[in-house]
Length: 317
Ligand SMILES: [Ca+2]
Ligand SMILES: [Ca+2]
Figure 1: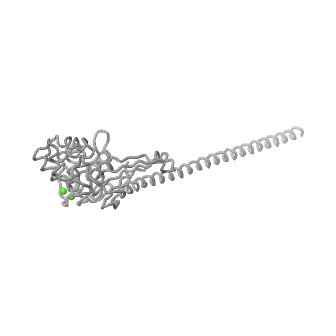
Figure 2 (figure 1 turned 45 degrees about the vertical axis):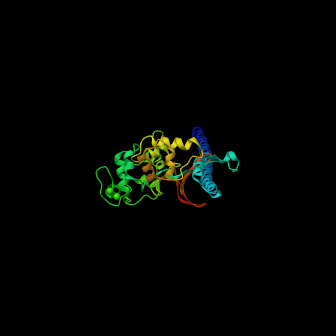
């Protein structure tokens, strides 16, 4: 009898202990779950705050970059643009935060170049392609196919058949290029060829989609002069030397070529065909930075009198 009572009591004690342990385990699980939930919520909150901050920073960077384009617009409208003034604006670059003009913690840099210092992708003499060592012959053929009206090519080019078979399938343009960024749709042209790198110029820095096919002799680079067919190799350096000798040295007409004694008769005649002496299109680079966010914009603008019209605007690397 005693043994039976003892056994029953021990059984109750054991059950009570087990129930106590179970409750303890449940409490521990609940506490652990609450702690995990709390950590999760805190993490999520931090992530949401970071996402919101990144969004605000990216907006800030974008508006800073747009502000840079506006400042160039104001600069152009402030006075008439002479050939000499074009040279000055083409070198313009400032960090606006250093000027104390913006309260924001971001930075802004911008500069304007003469778009007419670049070769016209649509209207340049097709022979310029023979002077290109930045791209392969096949790539040049693909660019020509992209623009020509026909649908015929050889094994090195690309027309509809190639582009339609691509993963994202699209048709060959078969018309003039309207914005230089279109080149990224052309076979073989990737970001490295388009933007360039430490070793070679990018196509975006050599070509323009605008203008009448002539380059502005007052701003064109030696690199671009070297691409013009038939000119002697010393023409580029001679032109640059003349422009740099005196800040007032500029060309107002083809008669001014006689000031460069190194030019042959043929060079002078060809420069007369290839060159212009003023500009109506300009390229603006504007870089906005807010903390880790950056926004790099490139805009092409057309100047008529003092009125500046934005023709195209794109994000760049
Ligand atoms: Ca074509
Ligand atoms: Ca073709």
